Image 1 (cartoon, rainbow, N blue to C red):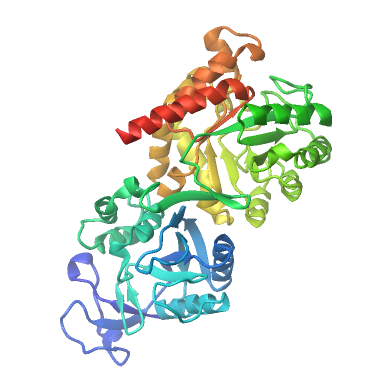
Image 2 (cartoon, rainbow, N blue to C red):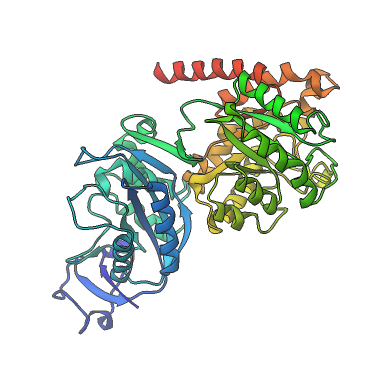
Length: 510
């Protein structure tokens, strides 16, 4: 395997042996650090940018990732997904932009040939430069090397002026410099000392949500700008033994009536749960869970009020997730974060739906055992453990742009832990950002509704008496960065949501 490498100055630690510079050289050999030579290459870490504005843009991304994997590119990280206004040639549809980080044994020109073939196979033709295209794949970085030839420049020559490229590029990094390769990528940054400084000079996070650039999550048939307003998820328990409302919605008629009520009260999503995950709950079989769940999903998807709303299934069984999605559910909400079913990640990756990964230790029958309640710093520990689950999900093929985070309030937590999480959501994001900015930007879901810790604080033994405390808890969470709140009483919390969104918008605009 060979690559073309632009030699860097000696201060970066590269040296060239005479063997590397003999008959294989493609430029005159002299002392300049810019001499281009061909050298042996091991497996290299790469970053590849993706763009699309023709046809089904998200499908184009999914297909490109599939073909890249088949072609010898192992994808390890995904950036967020951005919908952006076109640049240079502005009279064309909006783009989707993202990037992936991976490893490959392909040399840089082999990699370029593979990416050009994928573009051609997906219908890209020679047309207007910067004009419409079903897929655009660009090599941003290749290993630690600068590359310059007649057909390839790495780093890509126009990275430095394009926020729609730099934003997903930053997503693929963490605030911690985790390798020599990443340190080298930072050293390539033009007009700044590192890539983070470059991003800030371009405008940084202030660009997202304005100036023609939105961070979006694909769900159902649309791209969801989840940062524009807090979303309200109504809980529908189809169980006889849930801690709050077990047994109330077992019949299909009662369940549909409750869904209608929650929708009229302002719910954006309905979360179906057919297996109790309260402390010490006994696990039921896949078959029993499906028997409770599927008739209700089939009935709910037929009511006119559900148009434009999202449906979620609360399950840790991959078989249940698959069948629910087949019946019309849009999201999978897994309290175990993939720990209770080894097939979950692969199944969700194939379903191509958003996945809520929640933090929990043990399972519902053991999560409150003493050994599962020990934390040094609950926000840091939850962030690290959740990141480890998310990293596995990404490696299995669930892109960061389809992941939603849930710190697991009430699961493997004492009262003080739950309080610390509600006020420490920013700290959780910051800790995840040390390893992955993309995952730190993912939507954050919280579910404190009627939980026992609220009863402990407010001296309310009955779960049904904890709605006022729930309003206070979700208010704290929203003002600290939660994007989705999951509640039983939609009406009470809808007003809290509207007020918090107004407060946050006012703060942002002043």
